[in-house]
Image (cartoon, rainbow, N blue to C red; front, side, top):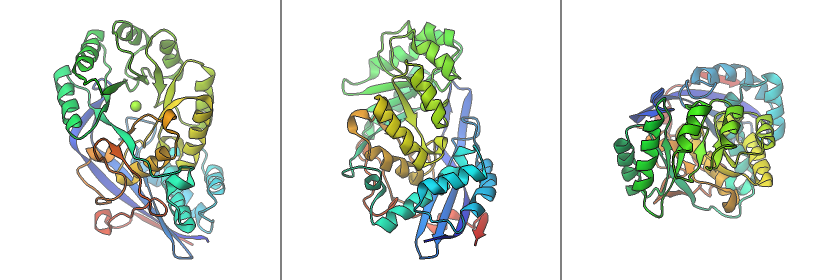
Length: 369
Ligand code: MG
């Protein structure tokens, strides 16, 4: 089986509401999505999606994905899409780095492998069944009252875990947010405080050593060293997100001997192949992990839910569904959706979903053998 054509689509993905994070430094109104379709000489087709969460969140942006595909896609023509490690070696040789741009191609190859094997991705990745993965809400930065209102809305949709976005220059404001949110939670609910790099280490210590919570704190500062400095001096467990890219970053995080968990986002680390490698490392060292994608439609969300569903429950924390924030749905009704606070991956072969042609528009590039 050989790759005969790669078709690229550019989708604007507007959010239903403006979204703020990192203490209000970063505002998002729409996301820039890239969809790829890989066709094979034997008739199978696979889909992938790459969607950095805007261009201020990570060293990644939508046009960068499509520019990198100009180099990556021709190199994959004629390759066997089922040979995932080989596919990734070809991409890494052709274009070092640029991990986020490789993710949609890797995802589409997994989709084809699953269809060729007649197995859903959760099974190919080691899972025993299509488990319902608990999902967490994502609570945009705001006043305590605004954030509690968002938690109440999420609660009505079945969410019992919330990721509250904090961070700012005034420790009193974040202390007030943490205390108000903690008091508003139901006994069955949990919250993670996601700082998205906004605090300096000193500010992080001021806030975290002034509050009672034992909730998880995510990516408090910009760098891994700064996060490690904080993690050694606070009582809350600290997990990493934005500072993790390649495998060496994860080794460095482990050697710091102070982090308790991480987020695994296929688009940030270069695709499902590399994400699975990191997942297996995290399982071995005993980290807790959220598995979800950086952003995008239910296609990208579902790929991550397949990986999450194949991961041992005791190691897994809740996943987030970006598509619940979107005003459009390129894969209408398909894939892993929130049903009462959990999302179940499809059991069809591969990813188990196909974008609706009417939502994609005309391709922006076609690469053919
Ligand atoms: Mg985060």
